[in-house]
View (tube, rainbow, N blue to C red):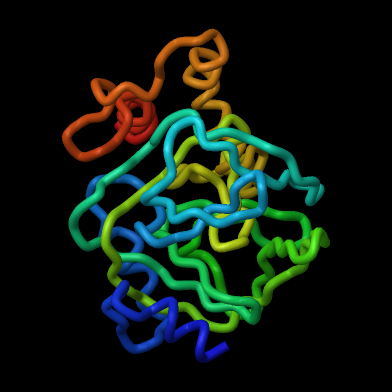
Length: 237
């Protein structure tokens, strides 16, 4: 485990003293409003091979997992957020099967029920869905979070898939970030992931009808897709 951590950290992060208590501060540190992964995060492709997210392209076929743990082939249809340079603040989630690094506001699925939560809400002991493939054997197991670290990493990437999900560093995650669940009397009625996925329905339908939703003309100066920026302006004001 320690060797895996050393390899993951070598040359990619500025590592700070492990902590949990500073996550509320970290959560507001990426001012562009996006929640994403760093450039060396690994995405699971449909053929079970791994590809660095910085090398991922629109049209790439990837593997996804639904709430029942069922695997399916999906496709990268656009970039919600993509910035290739600069240092950004991430949370590095260490678990008993490896590491996943993402921004504090990104949505990750937690527990056997795969409840969508912001990464900043994770606590040691939480369970994450972890996919492994070896010798044509596929297994989904629960990885247990052991510690959470504040790190800096290069680049910021958030691909959009048709299902709104993907496997990053073998962990089941959402394509989305930031939104809070819709609540009534303190109870979640619509999850943060479902709310974001519904918001991106027009963009997915545009893709389905053959429109070019991945044109560079649709990306603003901060690397955010213009439709994502529109949603942020509508929801956040």
